[in-house]
Length: 459
Image (cartoon, rainbow, N blue to C red):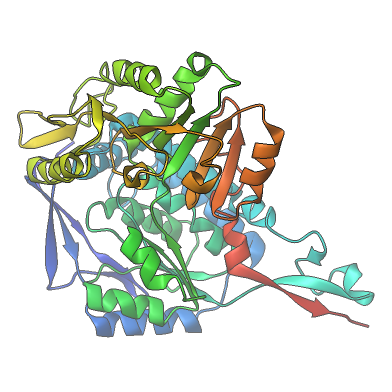
């Protein structure tokens, strides 16, 4: 494969590919030129969104067949002259995501493409049907319908797998606009190209790389939108019912005194380091009823054995960054960790790879209180805070948590954790925080946001 020449990533508008005069140079993790991304102006966005709104939705059977074909093509075929192996390598070098993780994500996207409608149907209320022609409508029923026609996504670039979720919107019949991340736009470019090659029209799904001003226009002109980002993104869209924000997960593990933490050490370490520690479902903090010191020491010993390797190495685990980006994260960590007890990574976490890139080595810090603010600091590498927990602390330390794995035999405690609406997922026992399965919600069902019920009765 020739990876020395930067590839051109055009916008994919309603009239086909569009190469803009305004281009953004995207380097690989070593800082070498790797791709040129066309950035479209606001007027292009306006026209593209108008075309999506005017387009007709494909019939259900047609779009589901096209989704399945596209998933297979995306994962294994040649798209826009690029093989699957070349694509995976380029994503790894562009984003720093280890190659093995890219491959797993690609398989997950293909699986979602084939099963997007089944996943969507898992969210349908049991009292609702999909079509007014259903016999139940003669007696009166609820029909499950879209809340709109155009869906927009401001995508993240930390992991290719984020592009699996919005395929549900296509399955539901939405026309979809994607604003890609500047860190890794190749995955949505390839996926949308595969969708178009498999039966979706150019006016059904578009790729709109933009500057920040035009990015807001994408959301304004969509019926519904989904955005990814940090806490500032959550705060910005918290009161907008048309936008679904996806932010930090701050996932956690609780080990109570009635369980021996040694029996769960594999699960704990895996929850911290799986997917390179970059996902919202990776464990940010571990809470221990009793002395957290031996738990922190054991986690640190395991994590210290992870090798530092370039992302395209088959054995790579850690995500790579430019040295400047890695140093910035390291500085933030060391400032926030002041006053804590470091078991790993107390002096430095940056490990250079000799080509201008670096990885962030794992970090383990012990806290003095279950209420310490550090327990909610989520960083995109295997960084975990280990804290004591007491019955008096109760469920407060676990608020605003995407996934909580609770290793406890206390059913009353589990009842309280389940009842807390700010704990979005509760895994009981020996289940890593990154566990997911088709048909099981990640952060509620996306279908709950995309769809609504309408009462229908017919003759």
